[in-house]
Length: 206
Image (cartoon, rainbow, N blue to C red):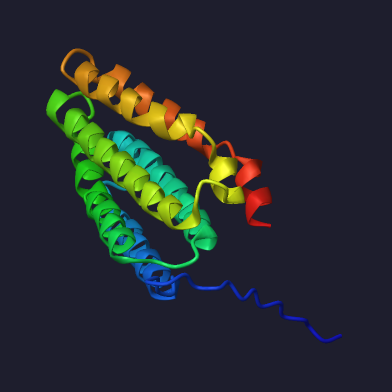
């Protein structure tokens, strides 16, 4: 049975360029970031299960960061699927997001190895806050090319999660100087909040 390929021909607005290169570049950068995080793992010197115990905090930090990167990759994919093209503002906003994401392996390793210390937890929160703000700027840049009547823009709506996340990150940064474990719980809560899929966006894209 032959396979039918459906090609969607999205008309390009004046001054916009194709999204293919931007999406491919971003996918490659995120893949490298994840690879770097894995390379950071060093096996224990011993050969028993008990030797893995000291690595548990580092592994948990890796899981949390992997989830955040997966969330950004999925949402980034949805954004570019909705975009009718990219311009200079979109490209620079995208580079801002990638800048903060490239810092994730460093802060993940630091917090994982010093999970009870305030500075690593606070810096981890600063990087997540920067990434959230950068993603929001990228979203606004793409929305500006779509128009407020776009089905995708209407599906995103007030974007309560996008506005709530930075507030939680700021709170987590403050708690890092008081009780770092509370900050780490707040990071997990944000991840859980974003893992829950939003079917409105997928329906709008269809």
